[in-house]
Image (cartoon, rainbow, N blue to C red; front, side, top):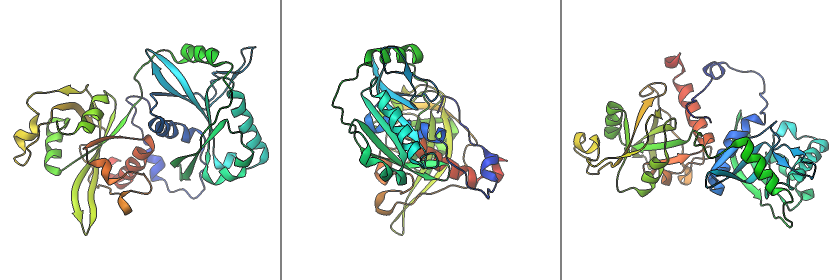
Amino acid sequence: MNAWIVYIDLDQIYQKRSWHKCMNEVDVYKPLASWFKQQRKLEWSEITHENPCIVFNEDDEKAEVDVCLGKHNKKNLELTDVIHVKTRDNLQGKKDRYQLIGKAKLTLAGVENVWLAVEKSTYNTFRDGLDNDIGVITYEEKGDIPTNFSIRKEPQRTDKTKFSKETQDLCKKKFGTVIESKQNVFLCSMHDDNWDICVKHKLWGVPETSSAAISAISRSKPGDILLFRLNKGKKNKKVWEEFVSIWIVTSKAQQVIDGGPWKKENPDETRKFVWQVKMHPVYCERFSNSVQLNYPKGMDQETGLTTKMYWSGMVEITDTQYQIISKRLIEANLKELQ
């Protein structure tokens, strides 16, 4: 997701489709990259489909991958992992499987960790013939949203990459130096009283007692997304909540001595909110119709969000998790938005 872009096609949601929509690989790239970065604690990703960037022989020929990921090495981007993606509809026959494995084998010459990302039901069709050098990620297709990503097989390299330096030099040339341009999404959780103060001042803040929330807000930057959830406690032994709004960060995180307006304006608030960011609503200050998740055994099955994740008050979530919740919010408030 690029910085400053918050886009949902309202017409697409509004229309009732009578046909089956095939998922394309491009629908998988960004959610997959976001999830994999969190899993492997990586720092950058690039969608490189139709942009060959892996050197695989002495003639400087280049192979194509769908997603490149890696870490920051000073001001340069260090490539560590690449992923080849195929959807269920595009991986039906033996020819499709052989082509996918062949592309993956080719890129082993230029990068250490090579992965295939395939729909879960197709994994068994080729896993027995797959090289140990290649890892496998599976996912599920729910409508036009890929979800439930999982690492099924780790890559186990037995040799060294022959053209790692050439590939790194090419990636540096193509992708440049470190630029913080990715739009991150943070889930912010609080009670009603503090939410009203957030809206009034167009501020979001985290308390000095929450080190996890301070870590999250310090990573935020202008252009990032804040998805707001109101904690209503428990009702009939179930978590009672409301996802109510989507805002965009408009300033860098700043540390303030006085703790912000929350303690001053909310008589029940005793904490100081020492880190704050300015923000602006994306659609409206608060949607008329909120949405809720279900947490059997403490986890929502579709998003993978757990009740423990809300304890800190602010946590980074994946693009897939954000898309699932934001789409529900848009659908629930479609008439108001139109």
